[in-house]
Image (cartoon, rainbow, N blue to C red; front, side, top):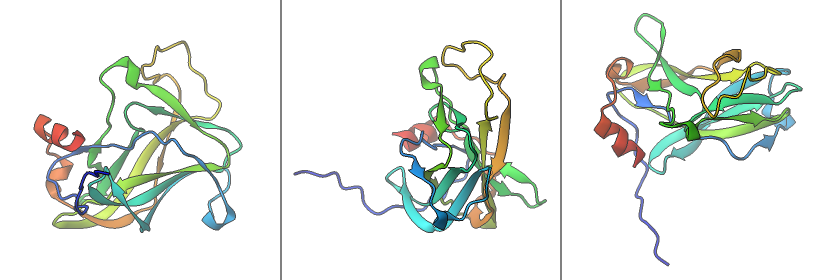
Amino acid sequence: IWEESRGKPAVLNIDYIRRAGYNNPDKEKAITANLQLPANRVVIIVDTNARTIVEHKYWGVTARIANTTADTIEFHTGQSLDMRMQAKDRSGNWVDIERPWWGWCGNGHWDVGLKAGHYWELPVPMYEGGYKTKLRLMLRHYVAGSKRSEPDYGLSDRSRPEVTIYSNEFDGSINPAQWWREETREQFFDDVY
């Protein structure tokens, strides 16, 4: 049987703000006591010891989005969750080094729910560059129990109140241009396809 040869994963060493590609989670797992999560919260934890491969070509680590509340928590999604990586700049400010990836049409927008007592695991890229800094993930979700004001036909419903949460901080490195240089059309399509 023929198999595509993908080669070894590479490090993600870029000099532009990349589109975040945190694909919609499809497998939720029940939370177990060994995860040691805080009670009654939605948390995101980056486990730098849990190495993985991102997009079949880059080294990465694992992020866990966990719901220890009593409610199902909904997240807006386009082609990706509303989650992105941030890096601490030279002044100590957190700055996005990824842009949200939103669909180009109404078919690419919906909500996804994470049941109480469950979590998702997602691969997260590990960037590499000449500037050592702290990194974290930022994630938005809807307030528990909030409802749509009226049908939105698949488009983002920004009338619903949202909560922004942040992961644990972890060591990493980036290239300073990741704070300001936008991705070109060619870079986007090279990365996607």
